[in-house]
Length: 451
Ligand code: G2I
Image 1 (tube, rainbow, N blue to C red):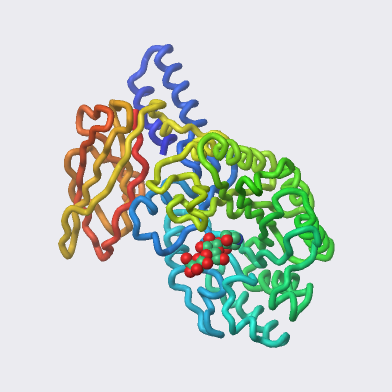
Image 2 (spheres, helix red, strand yellow):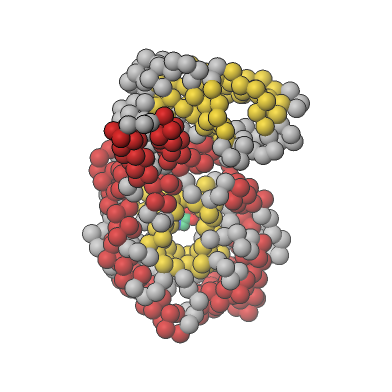
């Protein structure tokens, strides 16, 4: 977003420019813009990585949830919707509806999808735990095959086996129906079945409390080394990275990621959240991002949710957006660590605004939307807001703003008509009519950019 805006401005400036001095100024602006990035996803992309979040299908109807998702993230992980109890609650009956909602939302907007998870002792229906060994083996392989084939070619990485090792110093496998009835070989079998089901997906082993060098991560390390030496298909290891004061970011976090990468697998930070607030939370987040960037094969970071409001441990406020979707200091720390700029890619530091959408009228073929733009705690001199439609919707008219469109025709950037200045806390609004063309979906409203 920032890059496009600077590019346009710079081209306009260049075409009007005749003196060497002005040309130089315009080029300097262009190069600043090329380095600046103003979302988590675009900044991470600048480092060759994705920045993802866990998503719950339940909240896809909540406008700020969706606009934050669409603006900031380039990868999603369904938080619960792909788990065994969600997709095969009774044997042989597969239900993909809620997970499909997330996958279609993501792929329609160019985001990647992480599949989570195929074989896990938790959120496992009781019919699975009740099976005898040979039945369990075929149920496991059938589950992997059916689920992976349903999304074949659409999933970037799958957590094939999740949390199969015990906590503590034993280095042992965790007791589970799979472990207890099929023995150590179940993990290898799951990976071989997974490779056959969707050869394009990266196959990951995913776990927690394996983020530093310890007995549990040593055990996983030995398994991965053994798999690589025997040609068992494994492409990546996921480090969940759920941190709090009792379990802080380990000092050997980067070294641990690196030793796994050195085995010839990618490493991914798959469920990052850090309980806390303010500067100390921000610093921990920044340390995690810097560790990933320092490891060439650390290919991406996923935070375990968008907003504190819906975190699995909401009381610990562990995420990057607070329960009102405001960016926290941890957000700015992550963006900065990723090399992005927090000024909206061309805005003025300190200048800020928010954009709030309401549907103001509706007919069978169209609806009217209103977006209220409010200045933050400082006065602003101008603003812009993106409005993204669901094709084949079209905007037929707008009022109280000057629209411009991206090449797809689905993304409208609205700027003020004339003077866009707003006093601190003051607001204005613009509106538009969306022709439904079969889809009543609400538009998603991108972040408000101010200067
Ligand atoms: O526990 C945190 C994560 C640890 N690693 C694996 C992840 O899959 C796990 O995610 C959490 C989800 O964030 C929770 O949302 O897994 C929990 C279950 O083990 C999820 O909680 C469940 C509740 O236990 C259910 O009561 C609820 O119906 O979420 C379900 C859907 O909201």
